[in-house]
Image 1 (cartoon, each protein chain N blue to C red):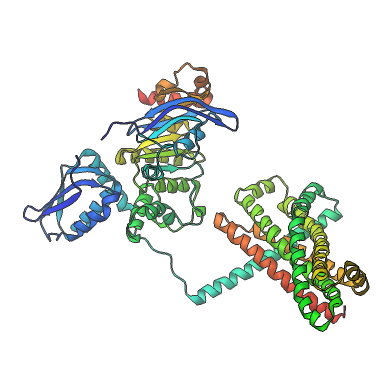
Image 2 (cartoon, helix red, strand yellow):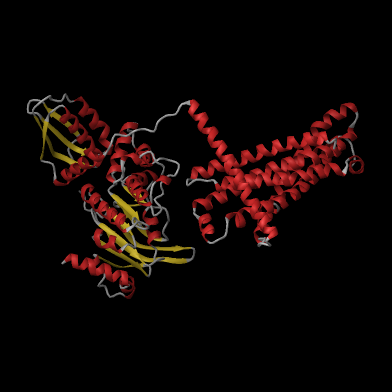
Length: 372
Length: 260
């Protein structure tokens, strides 16, 4: 049977008797009893380890800390009846803890410093982003003027994964948006008896704004994040360094195909979203507003100018450039840690959507100035 | 101290994805031993390690750690077993979002009721025991060199004062000097803390200097379990092929001389 884990101090004999399991699970108990002992201020103290059953480094460390505080107050000590293994462990811990230096916690920074740091970081990042855009633009020009190799396979892969495979979800969501628009506006129009105008409203809003904008936002969430995570992991795995050393620039094989691929896929997805948005709206109109499909389609052809479609369609490539370049850029700036991939993926989606909306607002101003 | 084996593997067989990895592996490791597990690439060393850690389920057979079958143990029992061993993974598996100190403190924070300052003290002690400078404590793993990352991984493996540690390729990718230092560190920890150590390695120097006994895995079984000097003389063709290359010869010559 192992003796009870405890530490007893006999004041008269100046003898500290340690017994039981000096390990991590008894550490708190032992420390409390050690703290209760009133230490002598002079002379010599005998520490008896005869009854110690097991001792691990945590227990040994506790004892050594206590001994160190003894020595500070000028008290000598002798270890008595410690087993060879325990003594070895104690010596090793003394040796290691003497190497330990006082720990300096990292300095806390003030609010002003933080604002300054963040500002500089943002400016730096903007600078790197511009460099990044410059790099792939040069690669792109090189591709066309010097007849470099166009990587059709990679581009096709990007279009397949980020265009073709997104068709169902984009169709479903645009259709629902169409339903919502028709429903919300239909209620208002019905009170004026202007049911048929739902077609004008639906056509213009979906083709000019909702189609391109919502598709871009969905693709930013779906594809932009994927680009960042893929490139980020490749960076951590040193795959990008490997490519560089083989004379293949990452821009050439990774970034350009993604940008070109999305540049092709997003406008097509936008048309797809337009179709389903309008269909969804008309479906709602026929069930709720007593219109027939014939009415809807007939009026659609009359009142919706081709211009509306083209304006919406024209925004898509710009959105594609934003999504792909932000996504790839965030992927390429991943640092060596898993949390960095997460952070950059979030940033990629947030920044892409942010810029999409800003650019969309700018487009609206320009188009209204041009009276389009 | 009880005299059961720390690890006991009985008639273990494993099929992974249709391929047979282990046919009939039997081994037993007793307390305080330092054993190496070697074998050609693809001999199932890593699979065996994963099974001993309970990460991969073997097809049949049993694995007992500290006398308890880990695949029959309840989750509480398993947790109690897990607290008694530490692992240094091949890629170190340090948590990249935590600093070195937080990495090493993590098991203490999860498994003990100690207050933060005690946890940090103990973690720092282990960091120093693993031979790392204290001022590295707030660095993130990515900022540490390869050798330091290994030491950090080891510090985390020993922070709960385990009785058993598993080291997966502890010296792979280290320069000879650092690798030698690491071997020394392992021996030192073994001597002072009375650890049982299982090392999976290809490093001949580690095998010669550190291990008491070496298990040679091949053909899905343990071909041999003997100390290095005997193992290199084992006539089995697979073992001979493993050690008779130029590197094996040089290492053998070097260490055989030392022994005399």
